[in-house]
Amino acid sequence: MMERIRSLRDYSARCRRDATFQGPALLLAAMIVFVGVFDVVSTDASLGAGNVEANPLVLAFQRRWGDLWLFPKLTIHLALAIVVLWLPSRRMIWNVRGGILLYAAIIAGNFHLSDWTR
Image 1 (cartoon, rainbow, N blue to C red):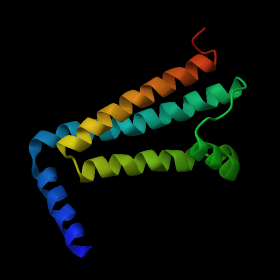
Image 2 (cartoon, rainbow, N blue to C red; image 1 turned 45 degrees about the vertical axis):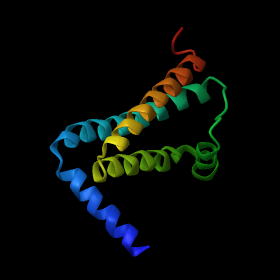
Image 3 (tube, helix red, strand yellow; image 1 turned 90 degrees about the vertical axis):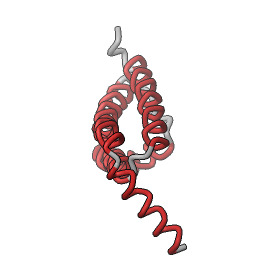
Image 4 (cartoon, rainbow, N blue to C red; image 1 turned 180 degrees about the vertical axis):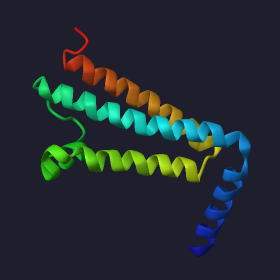
């Protein structure tokens, strides 16, 4: 187990030293936080229009935290952004781009359901 941790630590250090990954990783980390904020705004708009939360994790946050559910939600986005900055590999960048596109679709769907688009 310790060897695996050392290997991951060394790999992440090499990735952080590679200048080709630093710019994209920084941009994608900022975008993760940005889509997190827009997801919260679009979710609130959708819930305000009478819709229900479909994500069981976010629903659990809403039940446990009430109106402050956005803090654990945004904390997850911040943690993901930190991981991208800590391990800016080609695979990580590729996966994060896909995740951001997926989030864009979710945000668009939330705004559509909230009647903001009409």
